[in-house]
Amino acid sequence: MKKIRVAIAGATGMVGQSFVMLNQDHRNFEVVLVAASDRSAGKPYYEAVDGRWVMGEEIPPNIAEMRVYDALDVDAIAGQVDLIFSAISLGQKETAELEERYARCEIPVVSNNSAHRWTPDVPMVIPELNHSHLQVISAQRKRLGTKRGFIAVKPNCSIQSYVSAIYPLLDLGPYELMVSTYQAVSGAGKTLKTWPEMQDNVIPYIAGEEEKSEKEPLKILGHVGQGEICPASFIKISAQCVRVPVSNGHLATVSMNLRKPVTCEDIIERWRSFKTLPQKLGLPSAPNPFLTYFDEDDRPQPRLDRYLQQGMGIAIGRLREDPIFDFKFVALSHNTVRGAAGGAILLAEFLYDQGDI
Ligand code: NAP
Image: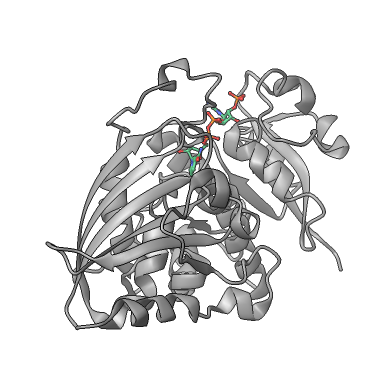
């Protein structure tokens, strides 16, 4: 089968490196171009990432020798690829403009960046949950004047675990969530080595993260209106986000109120039996099962459970009744795999399967 030609914009960064590794030997995608800032442009990839390659395995030989393009050189990139994974760290306005320029050149863009998450006709998708939102792509194409090009985004890494856990409970009427996230240093594009202030410490502030953690779930839980996604208004979320000295894996503790009565056993059964379309379609990056509930009191833990289902699974545990809310539980997801490159690749696989790419 002919593979889709892929570019990674932001390929030298933490998420970009993850894209490089997760696209290796992919059944549908082949990385043919890597792009980054003008600081890296013109260098072979191995030289551009020298001293900051953080993946456990070596750089794939076919990528190591590739010349890095300037991600802003849209014309040079556009003629060579069929799909762009965007993992650039630029300002919001610049990123939004750049991604639209790619799309207007008829290249589908699947982005990690937050710049377009609130553009009403840009779907923000966790493929197991709200793939129906991809319907708005036709309205977006009309606005952009494109036949093929569009932008689809994945949501912030902090929300993947608890929104996925809430989804199978929607008919029970969840209406209030109190969430605390314990977020790994890789979420800031750093390692424990390059961020010595994180040793023996927690930092109770992550810029912009609490707002994203409270609002992005509303778009995921929203519905398709006239060519746009209308955010949900049936639920309120309060989030506190804390940086902790963990390399990878964002943990969330969640308290929730539900409108309908239910038992812990029923909730656990809903999580264990939750079936979703990407798994049914057998998409290469779809974890099976999507949700795993642990009975052990001390799970999930980032070190033990972040690579559940190759980092794409959602780990849940410690469901119990709460003296103030109805229930509380703990959830975990890998922030640079499920929460970044892996989640974006699964979204692209879904779009490919549906004929949108
Ligand atoms: P990072 O490690 O700092 O990498 C940033 C990338 O953007 C590098 O490839 C860099 O190229 C490129 N870049 C920077 N300035 C540029 C410019 N002016 N023009 C073109 N390219 C430029 O960041 P990251 O952690 O990988 O995050 C990338 C994006 O994904 C961010 O938007 C972030 O918010 C989002 N995200 C991150 C995570 C996570 O867990 N880390 C999760 C979800 C989403 P050079 O190497 O040449 O400077």
